[in-house]
Image (cartoon, rainbow, N blue to C red; front, side, top):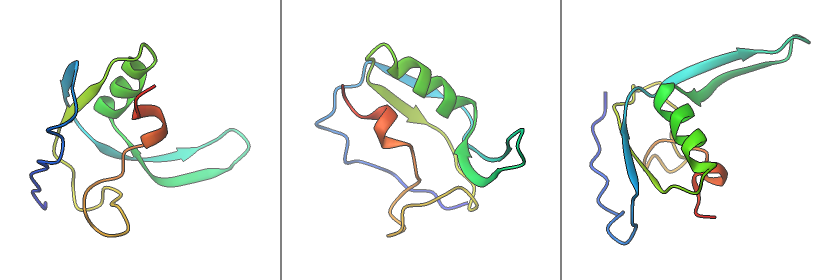
Length: 86
């Protein structure tokens, strides 16, 4: 596992910090469509649910080497649309 300390959040006010697991999800839909290697895990799903009420969320987790990374390698992929401020 690669450990990275992210310190670029100092200007962000966080309302809630969640701790949990980030996992890689392989999704198979009823029609046979597949989405392999998608970001997932309990903490991600909880954070997305909390964002529905406009809460600013921070995540504390480990992510394995197989977890989706940004193309530049500078961190993991979290769906920004759902987590961005309203």
